[in-house]
Image 1: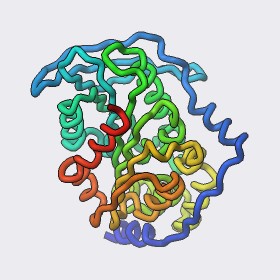
Image 2: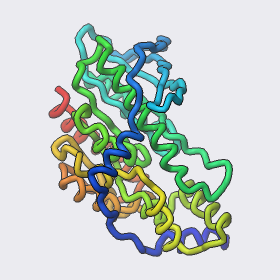
Image 3: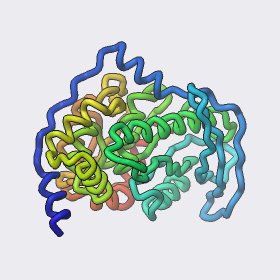
Image 4: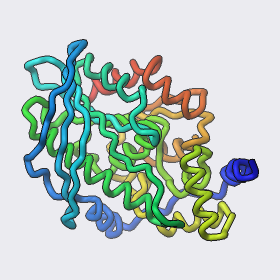
Length: 314
């Protein structure tokens, strides 16, 4: 009980301020670190069940970084049963992985005429040892390289309209979508950012989401430092890959942002900060918390998202 109270209180201490922008040189260097070797042209696809006008398959794609690290990545594809080429939307789940929300999004988009990849790409496991400063960068770099490789495949698969690629991410997926909006601003024609944003030092310090709070607590234990201010300071000095560092590359008219006014998991102030840094793109704000926002995105507010995607991808 004492631990829970401490985590809640420490998360409510607000020390954050806007991140300082990178120099052009430093931004280029970080983009190089996020680069990949082009897709090899090899992919394995295993057909699954079909229904409601959509076919499901599981794909395995080899991924290669520019420093020759390699791994295989598996993901699901929903494909409209049509002979016509279709636009493609990548869906990135929350920190909990694939929940009922992602299939609901995927089926709605597929039935609306989109190919949909459900890409559970974020490694949300805790590091083996602590404090593990920089762990988030290591995980995010692998995520971005994987997504870039999948985009290569999308652009070369004859079933898809080559240059009509969209991205839908919510919660942790929304944070990933926020950085992709700047890193892949040319290839992505539409980006949906749901209850996510940038300023990761602030989010990691203020979030009350149990997985994030637990990571923060383990770092406090490892360092013997129970100061939220010091935690954020170290994250500012350590983290290299943040959506706000690439905000000047974002194409504002390709972004649709959904924010939750009472969100404490990805605190609302960081969602607002990112919205402003991205040039105040099209958006709507819900009067609810984090989970409310996730559910509304896939249900009663989904028509707004589909309308935006249709305007950019069809």
